[in-house]
Image (cartoon, rainbow, N blue to C red; front, side):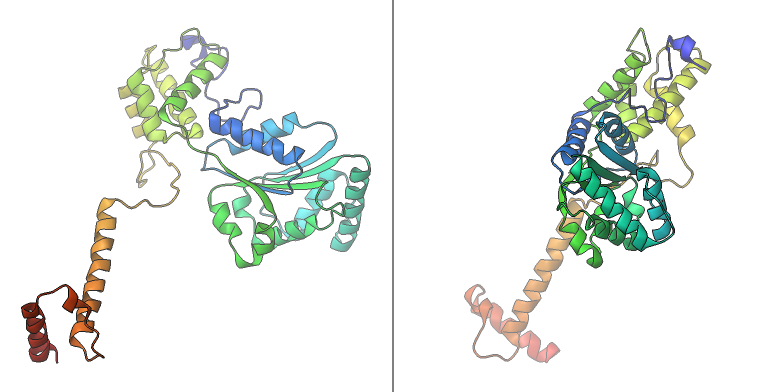
Length: 337
């Protein structure tokens, strides 16, 4: 709607992942390199995590588009499947027969891995949204890797998901799987500078003739409300451009960003936008309170050692005057004893 108004040739902040237009921040370049290394080095299990909207799926699409022809790749984007549904999906992706029989499938799959090994080919299973996989299915995936008679040189498994994937994998039953994870990597959120680079990159690849459509204050506010989350940056910037078009303004300022955020805010949401939280961080007051509590307990323990009957061990006698100790004993005998 606003493309002609701003001189774009395409939508700059489209939400759909585009493997041909991937902004590679330092964390994304490293993440993609780790994924490629996991394939080349044949590391078996790899775990990649990142907060909601950080571009994990986009990275996976970039990876699959770069794979060579000797790699058989299966990308599972919805892992909330039953065991039989999972095996049926694998069979379909790898061109294997599925007769609704797990034993027969495992025989076929083992033969498939053996044939790939003989032809110097690789088999890759990528599970996106892996943080929602049922534990039973994760166990099936681990056991599936046992079919690789070559010792892990042919079959690689990548588990990709939100940070809670790590706690999901901490299940006691999944200890054998955790011991097989050869690589872990976590995608970080954008800093303010990287957020600006991302917005400029999006504008440039959309054919913008002028890259100063957003003021510096507007860029700062976009970063603050999005916390550096690419998906939310896209949403806010797209909404701001639409607002600017409606108001016939070619420059987006901080007031327009604030207006857009107010319109996008979900009722009852604590933050201006639905950003991911990676665990509660305690402030200085929390730690001071905790320190005071621990100190109080230690002091109480020392007092009890002083006034209760014991075999001559009185640690406070080394640090308190005799008059204070007498007062403590007098107080305990009259009020505590």
